[in-house]
Length: 329
Length: 242
Image 1 (cartoon, rainbow over the protein chains, first blue to last red):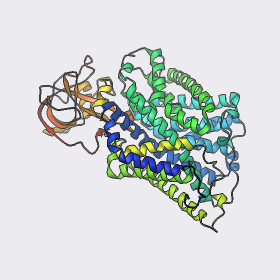
Image 2 (spheres, rainbow over the protein chains, first blue to last red; image 1 turned 30 degrees about the vertical axis):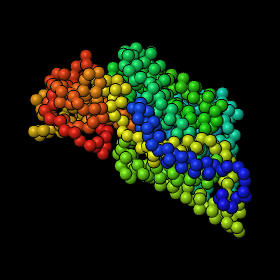
Image 3 (cartoon, chains in turn yellow, green; image 1 turned 30 degrees about the horizontal axis):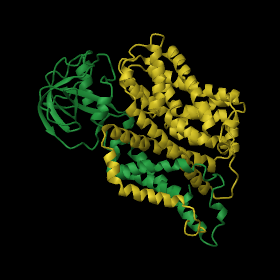
Image 4 (cartoon, each protein chain N blue to C red; image 1 turned 60 degrees about the vertical axis):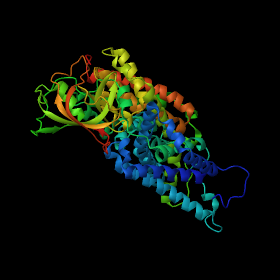
């Protein structure tokens, strides 16, 4: 604690925090007057909404991550997964079913898996699959598209193909040097009680990731105000343009994977295929996830992984759409 | 960032989530089903921070545990230093500003067409009440797509807020599926000038009848309501539908 630390002339972060809090309380009226503009107010509401919606899922993710760190020995994971990476990737993709949350929870868990010796490609397949193929998301999709039950199968196939495809691509082309060392280094064995490891891992992961989640929330709040939704309307039946625009929109809007089906369904006059692209791309790559990944695995990783995922997810969604929805869609 | 600062930030953000979850203001941001999640997450954050603080205080006492345990060997501190500061943004937004629920501004931003089905369909029978209380979403989709025209001639009670847009007055309500980021609006045109003097975001309860056949493809399926009575109300606890 600060009281027992040797006195230093450097200002500590604790003092900075106190100063910011005091200033913010004093300047409350000034801050509030800023929010008088309707657009700023809308953005502020969306920002708080994204944080309030995503933080509980991130907390769940760090608890799972802490649980793995404390209670699951690395050898158990090695035994569970097939020895061949090419086989382990689809297994990890299917294991995503076991984490029924949206994408924010999957990031800390995927990093924990890597630190526990799971091959990166396998952990990445899990990262992409978990938010998209879990039962909650699939049920939400079927509720949102009551007249098109084939959307559920199409979404499942498209997302699973994206996850497995990216896992295999990483196994073939990925370089460990793109990922920050600290995201991969194995945790040294400690003689601490397990619950301490659990609590400390969860706490550290939460502090790490939450800041990046806030960046993502901020970005999507700004974009929610800046993007004129009218241009979705103008697409009409243009299928190719529709696919591209919906893919980009999925990245920019950064919706929770449990809610995106309702948003896609609500866009009138758009064919099913672009809507499917929106549902497959969104949980795999969006601004919020990009911020989280850049923070967790490093910028060099995120700058390569995100665009590749975008292309693979869009392609998988289109193919899956042609198979399940038919060419007419 | 120092560990103590991180812990205090965790306490603050946990407290902020707890505050909105317990006072009911969380309904401005997420749907009601999220309340247990918010409370659970807030409690976990506070407990994790408290464990770390208690541990650090004990470890700092002379003669207590060896100090090397103070920093987790599993976690090199300082690397995430700067990003964690951003946690202050939601904390300050919630404690100092508490942004209002989305309203007229979001409705005007969104494309007009907002119904989920674009085909006519048969809807479940409506209750035979003399005055039919119905959600805005149900009202507008039945008005546009109900083959049985079940709303024609019925007196309905709608709750929403006023949106003034291009010389017209609408009654509007936003639906959310998860959080306010995915809100989509439903609007109903108010005929006559019962609502003429009301400003944007005024919450009202309106009784009236559907103008039969008013929701067409040409007006993007926005139905019109002939209002008989209009009362101003305070914003409902849950400002969203869905």
